Image (cartoon, one colour):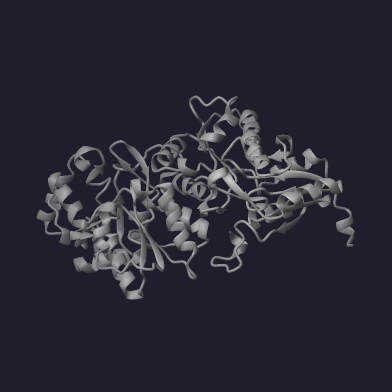
Length: 247
Length: 247
């Protein structure tokens, strides 16, 4: 066993595409063997943290769904973008216009949203309508100093009925229209991985990130000094037009 | 009078934001003095060509609307992206999946659209739904060699009820998701201006482009060797967060 492997104290697990494929009735389908893998990790004594860019639901609702699918997971074990964004908004006195999934809105309950001075975009799914995108665009371009905060920057993800555009695509649309660069909260942002590591009490070189996204999961973790493993489930595609290295 | 001004033989006129603001009942509102300006240009003996990135309607329907608003304009005087795209599709044996406005579809009547091997995106307006964007994305990422053709790459435009995201924003979303670069047909593509000049029988240094978009109209024309004038109507914004130079 290599020295680095003996030094491992904690694992960071992506959820969508690693533990389950989302979508359809019941909210998704577990990936074979993943619930058992979580149990084995927990039994091994390794520290475990779920590190997700999920923004289609509050952590409470998301965790409840995963428990229903057979996973041993609690809200306290999950690092997700919305709470990190709320901390950032409060620190900087930002009042968001939200372009997010209806089910994520409760995460922003304590945040002042009157007279917005920034736009927060998440994986809004059906809320990515023509009207809603125009509205977010108008708020953003109307600001003296446009601030766009994106909950992740994924290109796409896999649901049970096929691939779907992720928040990153819509982030790019608003960036281009308003000539701004979004601030990304969530993977692959370094601060996001660092807070997950701090919550585990583990140093980067003692941790491994496991995910299906080569940029958000693998690239982000590596930039943070961690090792990372890409699974071949979820959005992983063996034949690669375009290169999987960029998905 | 400067030597270059005496050499001018033809004018290229953008339409939306220059002649009229689109949207609302009746399809738009003429900008004060513009119909008279078209008449004066025609009476002056200068050659005139309307050079538009309009893709929300066939040229026939678009011209009829403008005639109804009081403009002296005919289909034969209009250079627009859809016919240019059709020529390109035929030349290269491309069969498009269309993400365009319903009213533009007839322009592609002669084009084989079975078993698509490319995606053509225009200003689809209400057709820019979450479902339609996902569908175009899936076609594109499923191709062995993804080809994305964009009818213009404008950031936004002004309608009577406010600013709207233009095709360029959605083009960027698909480019990012699929890691491809779109081929732009329409302004600011050099080939598009060149065909408009050829249709007038005028050389670049003998022509002036007049538009409200600093990139698509002014930048594109200048790259083609023409002079260009930016009007202060349409999307022009005097106070500029972000810089008007980039809108």
